[in-house]
Length: 373
Image (tube, rainbow, N blue to C red; front, side):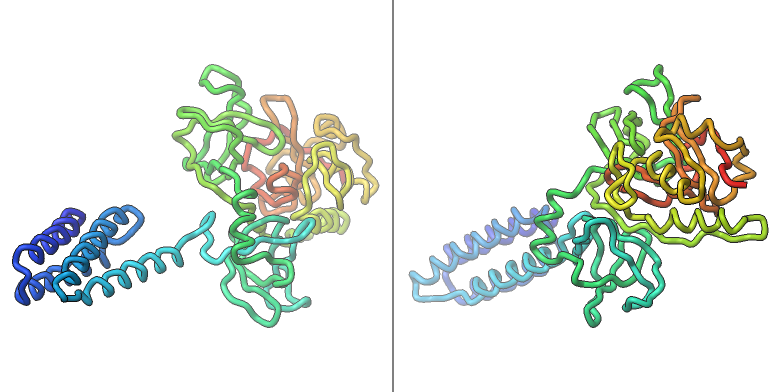
């Protein structure tokens, strides 16, 4: 109804001026114009641009007729300014992947996010290379940012901003499927008769490989599967910051287990490289656990399935920092992570997220093994 009012008002004013050509008509037209402008201010958005353009066209036509008769419509100039102002406001409110003031991490691996703006500030998170963030304010060479579930300060020298960041985001953003139900099956094929690879929990973000009307092909860690489209929400996202949380320490946890978990956490934000075994240049899931365990005298093969044959079995209720958790499909193991306590793991997940912290039960564990003690 508001769109019709805008268009009708513009047409009526044009007709009124053409037919009457009097001061009275101008006065009435101005009154209608004021109402149309008010409606425009309330309704203007992406979806009402067509109506606004119709209104502007009518104003220009009236201006031409008035000039021929030696009269001018100051309202035309005012209307154009109103439209330009609204367009400018809409541009300012534009977001890119959910960010109004976008910043992108310009680093090789990750950028530390600190609680206060200074090198001595406590590390509260990690911003991976090419990850996006909302720049909240600038302070003496530091940006106060928010990304994912982390807020804190990063050195401004390592953040790309402005139009450069906007253009870069177009090439970096990925389509992500976020689980919108309590649990959902990830299947081997796009149907309900095939093998269930695993169960994934609410709010887990999965990189989309290919979209379909009924099934979405996704990447879960370093393998692909299919999820029913009705149980996920799709969005375009940049990589996000990851929370950096120190592992829990209790009387039951030995110094070596505590130290191992802390060492593993220090690599959060690092790169994932399939087949990689370098903690600085990139690792895959078993490459990560292999290198961390080797620092504590435990030498494992570069295979998640092979590593599951070492140490001793423990239940999920017995887990301690430093234990390994194995995931996969059925009894077939394809992924491994290090338990850090508090129901969390650190693992080399995939090329999008790199080394990150996750809920230990974000997918169903197959088995758990203790390598130390």
